[in-house]
Length: 401
Ligand code: ADP
Image (cartoon, rainbow, N blue to C red):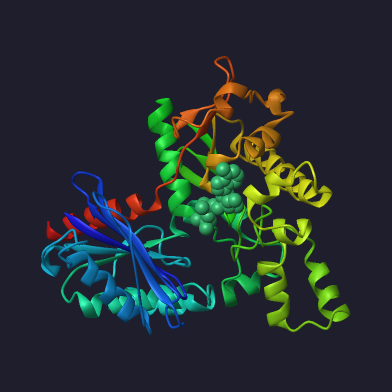
């Protein structure tokens, strides 16, 4: 089956084309700067060089039209006709409480997704634009929604209810939803395959550390807790997001600095985290380059790993022990220093890193614990697009039967 996977952001559309029977990526790329000057399409067919094309791309429909035309083009294409696309899988950020797994998109699903806009006002509208555009350009082709929140719908209520008046949950859906679910699901399932542990008897902590960061506690294959909350702001320190803090701080700062709600949202989401503390960068590579020379870069790094260590401890408690710890995302997959510092001192919990394996770059997917470590520690490159493609394949097959 040929599946087009789309991740539609506010000004970008990322795509991958899969042959799902072979689990092969035929092409991938992205359109950036949609609706702005200098929009550009970067496209990489699996067997040829990357191409960059610029043009005027006013909206998501034009962007996807552009993607389809390059997928069909003589020199850079990977298919001959639009009809070869059997299905489209969409990444959708927020599925609220309505979706605990991926679904075939129909009118009712679209209505529910529109209701979820309130929860993710920045993310869900472009996701919906992507769905509408793909449905218009590929009429009759099944569209599937895969939600960042779905995997965490298995959390028990005592993990997702905040210490606020319960009426706010009932009235406004204020609760922990969690994000990066597709990634936590993929790497935890992969961890089960790699370790041979049973899905029915396993305690796994997954750490997705990219520009956004979250940890999840996964018991017997199901998410029982995760660090991101009502929005992707809570939890671990991130590139530009604050993560956990005393909520009273924001009320104080809004008064003292005369911030509007928009200013405060921008401060917490765009000017905090590694960037805000270090004054150097939101990018972990640059923080690590300055680790020895800049006190604040070092402080940002230390806060990042200290907070992660606390979550690992907390989730081991929530799970009643720990079998496997997984690192993924750009930082989790690449930073040996983050991995080392975030588990140093956790030998008492049975976590013992093998320094050589931790520093090795290859294979990308590998165990990094000592042979006699009680807890197994893995680096597992995430692959959210593959999950979206395979979920789409499965749902379309089920639909046919
Ligand atoms: P996103 O969350 O946007 O998908 P990624 O998962 O690609 O982002 O993660 C981006 C983060 O990974 C950045 O902070 C980047 O600095 C970090 N990163 C990538 N390579 C390395 C590396 N070799 N060492 C340390 N950090 C790295």
